[in-house]
Length: 396
Image (tube, rainbow, N blue to C red; front, top):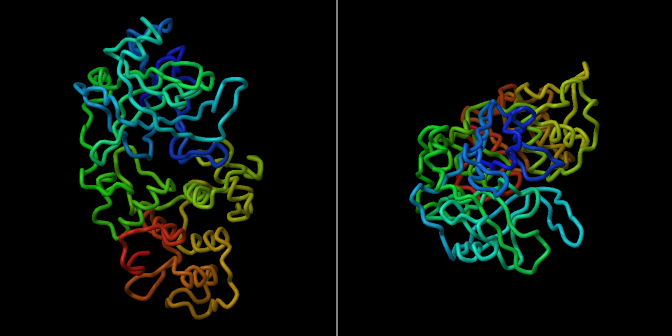
């Protein structure tokens, strides 16, 4: 993971946690990963923020797509609008205002002369990018965050938030960003050669292309996978895959539903379950439990790593979406293997709503593990997200 060196003042991995796959603190994140190691640029000078760049090696892979970085010979995209993001303060002046989640803004990339004039010798043009103005900039707590520019269907990171004017103190704020391209060789010396190719240039502008994941083009649920990814409900893995055939765990299910339903309150304490405190999806599990969408087992556990069956997913969705079960005939669902099963009524309810389908042999297979691809199909239909899917049956 790429960040600013001043975010790691002691240069140690102890106690460093990386949260990925989420945008609100209350809901939680797809993963919270311990740092295995940190690498601060050897020439970093904390007194002037020179060479303000560092890498964090994660103990386990992050289940999100890899960010494309600017090439070593890339020129600053002066005049282009860049997107910046972070969890820092909304403003510092006249009094601090905290953010409740991830915030984004678009800022113009400026020429080096603007930042040199403002920051003097602290701004090094060869290794920095100047951006901001129009009342928008990064703020305290946003350090290490990305500055990205859309290029031919790809999102390219040009900068890492370093320093700037006190945000909110002036009508026109400008910030300095460590130039990623200038450190490309150093980054690759620790990570290995990076693939500089982004999504195809003919990708639709309003959703990720199949190039976002290397393993979904042949999936029956490709459209749904891209739709839920674009909606911020589900991400991929660190190797660029989505793994549509991988089973969904109860912890992941909680995260998917918390984002789908916009549950932003932790309604029950961590000690409500014996095995949730400190879990990757702790906040999401507590949120769905508080909303009475999911509960635990008789032994006081939630079992976040246990897999979810297709029948259980039907029950979770029925409760979460508050589907009306009146008029649902649990004894006559359209599948040969559902009558008499534990979740027959829930299965009938989501089928009636057009959320779920079955298999070509006329079965629903309620005891089979629900896969990530099937989960994407369920959620895309539940939210009526635009997809390229033309059928409900087959595997969802």
